[in-house]
Image (tube, rainbow, N blue to C red):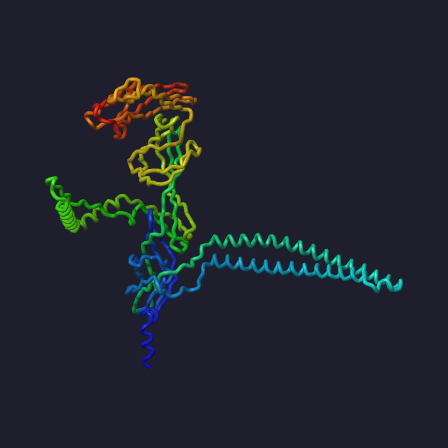
Length: 544
């Protein structure tokens, strides 16, 4: 009689417990640029005592070490989690998928019956044609010539009547077969649409993980189980429509977010929150290790040098590790503080449904508006026409995240670009396409390259450039033209330059040698800029 307890001892403990199986769905998700925190809330009822609430529908890729559980209405006990050897789920399939599958099966059966009906009609025509062939052979038999006239007349009449009837039957069968085939054409189209509808539904047929939650209570329990965990198989990214109204001097940014997930289960009516936090990225500042330098006799043997290098590296690593250990917690706290300060969250007001590996859902994040100053930016070194630029200051009170943007100018689509990060209070220059009527020409008038020029000097190089901007449009434009001269950080490489007119700005954006001219150019007008530079260096040196 003791054999049964001994055998049962080898089975998992949840089999012996007073189990209460539950079916769960994702109810909320906080999505990050990569990853998400997912929450499942499941109501339950249980009699007094100790029980295990069993969930067997978590995605198999769920990182079980990140699972966090809370219980309302009972006392929470131990948790059991596993990815393998999970009990089978209940056969509670998705209703929409089940209906679509049943419709495909119904239409397939109807098509089979229709094809059988056409075949039966075709058999009627075949039988009638066989009768006609038999009657023809009957009239050609040897005994017909010896028949009396009356008998021959009766036979001919019978053959004619029977042949006519058989031909009518064959004709009727062919007409009915053609009509049945036309009906089958419509049925095949309906079946193809049903199959497409079935394929559009993503079945949840992947393996799952299991969670067993132990609860207890002295009285009847009725409450809610909340399970949350972190995953990598979900993401969101910002997308924008950037619209410039030149006449009003206004820039409108229509913000959206593309949401996708690949968890193996479909999300239905989920409360979605979008966060700019990046828990999958770096969350603590980098470490700086002690840097030991020394001098030594250059004739010191290589082995000693190697030993000293290695010992110095080991010493530096040990000292750095000790410093890191002492400062680890404050560094992480500092990183968390900065990270939280940069994070922005968006809570979408309506539930969202996202099919696994199938959907890219676009959610609206609202519109922002600011003023914009436009200018035609000309870079004749690389371009043959100027481009329209809009300068803005982010006074809209929100961070503009990096993302893909569709750019529109006065209601016309001009292109697709990446939008860089624009912090609150930050400035940005946005490009809205070429201005074909603003033509740029950059001509090298004279160049002396050492012994290849008309003036042969091995330690001198000079170049004279003429830049021309022509306004062939019907309106005046503010122009910002950029060009460059070489720069040097060596005293013995001397660079001199002249420009007519002088540039309005030198070393633009901290870039040495980049110069900017700003001027207004009326319709039909042109402007010339002369830019010369000369490089001189010692005769025993080579210019690079």
